[in-house]
Image (tube, rainbow, N blue to C red):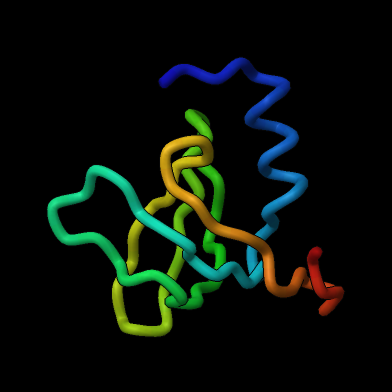
Length: 81
């Protein structure tokens, strides 16, 4: 999937390093991370993949539009809705 520059820049603003997410579902991965696993954003790369350190010890990228996840807290500890 290809995203334009503005879309990727918006992802980088929405998911800065330290943002906490919770995975709802990971699609199309041979070793998916289980639903409800929480993780911390490391960075968003230039193609829009959000790379995370998950609490179960895995480090993996999630892809908006392919994987389902939501923010549980941002760097300033606000709770996402």
